[in-house]
Length: 74
Image (cartoon, rainbow, N blue to C red; front, top):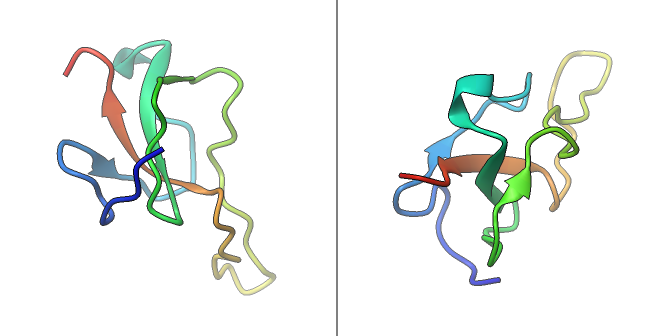
């Protein structure tokens, strides 16, 4: 997994509040908070998209949070 700036080139930053729209496909390229991108797309259905939040609604950052995505076909 190469490490890159967030969002990596061609990736779109996400909010971590919900799963991406189904129109984006069954699998997406994902970049996680520590900057790494994977060598293969992740299945949308089984990937955790919502970030943990504290009682005030602030993000509890975890290095494995998905922070940017890219369509497989684009």
